[in-house]
Image (cartoon, rainbow, N blue to C red; front, side, top):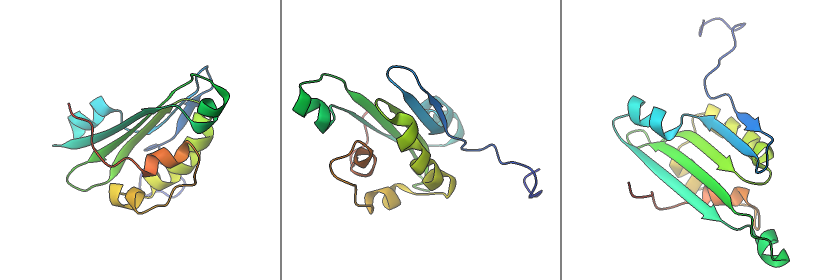
Length: 127
C-alpha cells in the first residue's frame, strides 16, 4: 500500500489522551525501538514549567526522545504534562519528515515554553 498515493501511511501517527495530566505520543515506544534497532539513545526530562514555579504549583512534565543511534533519527517522542497534545502535533511533523537529533539540537527553542525542552536535551539517560 505504501506506493499507492490514496493509501494512508499509518507510521508515526501522533496520539493524545486528554486526561489529567494529558499524554501525547508519536513514533515508537522505548521498548519497540529496542526491538527494532541495534542501539538507541533515550533522552529524558522531568521538570517543573516556569509557570508552575512562578505560581507555586507542583505539577511536573515528563518528556522523552528516542533516537536510533546509527542514523541519529528521532524515532519516538513522548510527553506527559500540560498541553501535551498541542505540543506533540508540531513535533509529529518533524518525526514524520525524518528529523534527526542533530536537527533538534540545531533548533532554537521558544523561551520560556515547555516545548523548548525537546530541543535542549543533550545527554542521553543512562540505562
